[in-house]
Image 1 (cartoon, rainbow, N blue to C red):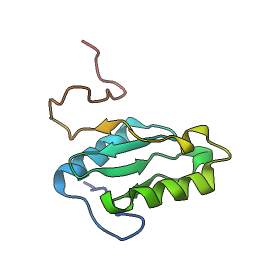
Image 2: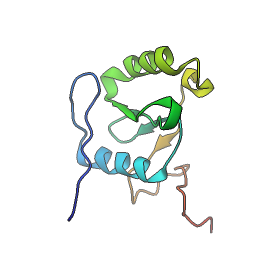
Image 3: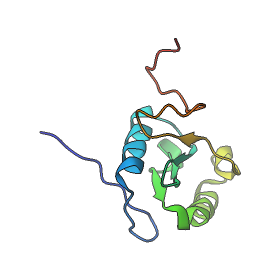
Image 4: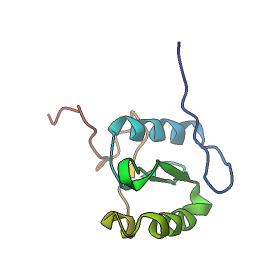
Length: 110
């Protein structure tokens, strides 16, 4: 049965546009741990969480600072990377040829 992941801003219940949605789905597939990532083109901020760093959390452009304050308050003592500052790695939508896009697990390096 097909399924679709649904993302919402933790603070205002905004939903991402289709291109940003695709970028967020790719972040989930990358299986990262305790990192901030920006999902383009909508500039959403993701805290990947997992394990001791709690669940993944998502914030729209307007609430990025709120997400960083929340993560620093709740996970700053157990995760050094919770206090990381901008610029964060950007995650381009699938299929874009933007230089500098991060590689995902399983992506060939050639």
